[in-house]
Amino acid sequence: MDKLAHSIEGSLLGLMAGDSIGLPYEGLSTQRTSKMMPTALNQQLIFGKGMVSDDTEHAVMTAASLAATWGKPSAFQANLAWRLRWWLFRLPAGIGLATGRSILKLWLGVPRKYAGVYSAGNGPCMRAPIIGVCLGNNKALMAQVLKQSTYLTHTDPKAQVCALAVALAAFISSRQNNISITEYREELSLLLVDEPSDAVKEFEGLLDIIEHHVTIGDDESFLKAIGQPKGVSGYSYHTIPAVLYLWFRHHQHYAKAIENIIRFGGDTDTTAAILGGIIGARGNIEEIPKRWLDDILDWPITHRYITTLSNQLHQSIIEESSQRIFSITGPLVFLRNMVFLSIVLGHGFRRLLPPY
Image 1 (cartoon, rainbow, N blue to C red):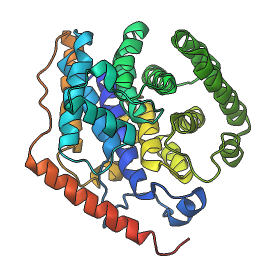
Image 2 (cartoon, rainbow, N blue to C red; image 1 turned 90 degrees about the vertical axis):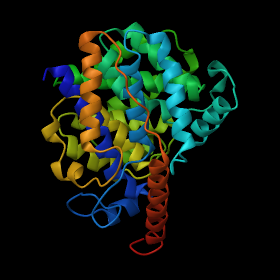
Image 3 (cartoon, rainbow, N blue to C red; image 1 turned 30 degrees about the horizontal axis):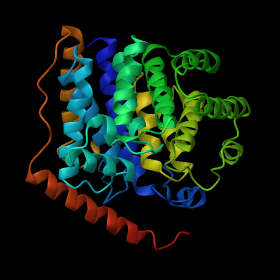
């Protein structure tokens, strides 16, 4: 396998592992997360096993759409839109409000260009790492595909700014071992030149905060500086600064980065998923703790499924042709989602008990 193949699989598996390992702590405060986390972080959703949420599902759908439309970028959005429609039809247990509303509009026949909802949630950022890994060599095409992905569900320009930031981070991660904040900011500024100035200016201010706190290495001070001392919210201008901060600090240490972002509290499955997708793009799959992947007990998205999909996407890129990637459909997936919902609700009742 070449470097690109490893980066594709590493990004998807890194995102999957981060999502599943962070899921049990979603919505907890920074303080309570630290109290509930074991000394050795492992799968904790149910009986020492984990499952995946919408973060992994979005990444998988994006990878499938890239493979199915490779060489035909104008067809990407339509392909992704149908995958999202059928995904909602199966009643996923976890779905962002903006994403859900936009897909309902698609089902009602609203044209794709009008389906998006004004929101800066994290849906586009879940889909961004794999786009960055696959298209980062062509920045103009990467930005075009990201825009199709973002505005299909989220129309706040901040969502696109963050998607660009995540995709670039994943691409850089797939290409080099040493990360320079200065070089990253220079490359990002070129990508953001056509984005609304107010959204860009605000994000640049957040990058200033990141750069300062990476230098001093004080996590608590950083969280206070971005206004998230009790846990990182699902607003992309909170999530992505936290992700980038820990990427800059621990870009060569997957497990350490994931553990730290879970300790930040808040939307832990999404923050860990996006960070995992970025660092996983290094392609060093052995850096992802084997037990985290082995203890994911889920279907139909499994370790084997991710590996197969990664190979298909890589083949599309190498051959410069599209692959036939079937959507995940059927009543069994609906039943899986009902089981997942029951487990998550049961886990929620567990949170009523100590430690507080």
